[in-house]
Image (cartoon, rainbow, N blue to C red; front, side, top):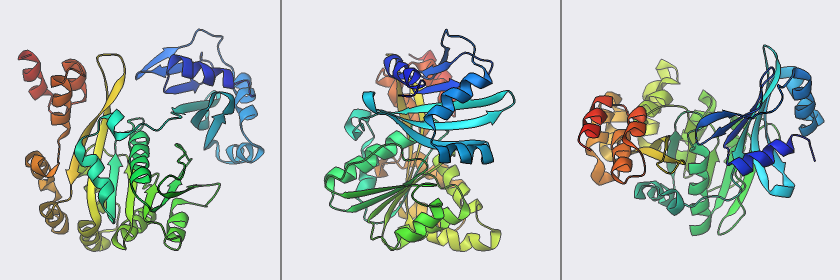
Length: 353
């Protein structure tokens, strides 16, 4: 057992989502969204290096010393904990950030997803993008979606991740999980190979470059249900982000491909709940014929209007999602307002409470 495992066990005890080791600092936990300093001795570069190198393989150490940062997954077997890890070099030395991956995949019912989210699992082909800032729960949402497909269908699910986070057992579906850097060279390499591996559903951990985006759209067009993530702040901006990633000369073709293949976008944020936890507020764009036409014609600036009037089609604006959480008394008005796009509307709403 590595010495650092004691901190990871403490993470579980404290229900912390993240843990940070930085030189010239005490250890820090993130609990319900807030950072808390752990009263322990100040860490030095030498202490951090000893703790971090003990948990890494020789290959990981070699890669880190070449690149000065590395992502990997790590398991604490005796307590059943799994973590997503990033080790990096900074001004004062070596540091590490760790995200706890829950051992149990929460169901859509437990996470209280809007009904439209599960409707995305019913498609046989197309692209669904889950987006939001780092740490907003994208991986948890996607794990729940894949788990729902795994339990309800008889398909081949292929995940491509960096690193593998939630581990899925084959239930109704066959599930194969490939880790970038370990099982495959890159997202793009794995996606090219995927088209020869007979998948029905493909999860791409991150649409991180143009080639991966293009292959994802192609896979969605050619009869696969593809899920991927991006770091954008709203559903309409996600569509623009994908199109603008391509050279100007290729954008008309990509608009046509995206208009045909996109099924929807889920943009989410985590909000503090009244009981001290956190829950997801989701903006949902459903790719109706009207949305497809706007994408095809290059009129994505009109998507917010469609989103605002599309409740009947399962659409939901972020501010409406936040409003509903306040009405349901899950979230305090001031916490919802801190995440809202239209803060003036929330000020009025709070006045009327």
